[in-house]
Image (cartoon, rainbow, N blue to C red; front, side, top):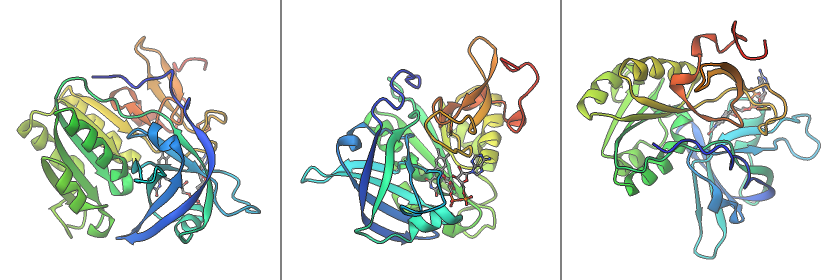
Length: 289
Ligand SMILES: Cc1cc2nc3c(=O)[nH]c(=O)nc-3n(C[C@H](O)[C@H](O)[C@H](O)COP(=O)(O)OP(=O)(O)OC[C@H]3O[C@@H](n4cnc5c(N)ncnc54)[C@H](O)[C@@H]3O)c2cc1C
Ligand code: FES
């Protein structure tokens, strides 16, 4: 399994003004397409973008982070960046309310990408809510490598499952779970994982979604002794490694626990090494404490 490549993190990041080409409501989300330049070439599944919100005189000084859903190029060479935005707070609502033709200031690609195996393997991709966004492009890359790709999309209600039809097209099997039973299996993604791991002889889990979901998946990946690459969503103030607001306690290969910046060493991290139960504290024994 290829490891997340540290030296290249953020080396290709650019800040630019990007025009919104399209903004469509999909369920409870907005699917947005931005015109970018050649940076689209450098975006990998797992990378994120940091967007300045609120306009020039806004009091919202912090950029907002969004996972890159897809990066591609139009036939005329224009780079395209697609995002899935869940409008809930002031910044995401502002972004989702922008019309095609408007421009935003963004920095991309940021953070680590999902590690891609060099051999064909059996992969299970698990997305919670808009957390499924980076998994579709990942599924394409894995399938191109000859992997068998299974996907689980979960949410509280059916309207919060992003792009179930796309999921069905791009993978070998798709399982949907909703907590209220309005679509697919009634329950949480973690309820169906043990059976799917066994049935499809899964080698690695890739996940993206709420932190509680990632923690629950880690319990399962550890008990089955399989790899778990997860994209974490810790609150990020700067997104570029300066402020230390995004840190999580992570055990290194040498056994030392370090408070690790998830915007630089993540968002894609080895879930089995994150100390989830102590993620809201600086635990005893952490390096430098
Ligand atoms: C890597 C990553 C990928 C993401 N991908 C997506 C995605 O694809 N789609 C999507 O809809 N959302 C995504 N999110 C979540 C999204 O970034 C937040 O929901 C967004 O910040 C909301 O902004 P808001 O103004 O609407 O919300 P608000 O809650 O009003 O404001 C949040 C702002 O406050 C900051 N903040 C809050 N708490 C803290 C804290 N403890 N320390 C420092 N700063 C804090 C946040 O960084 C952010 O700037 C992602 C987040 C991360 C980290
Ligand atoms: S968000 Fe500032 S260091 Fe990570």
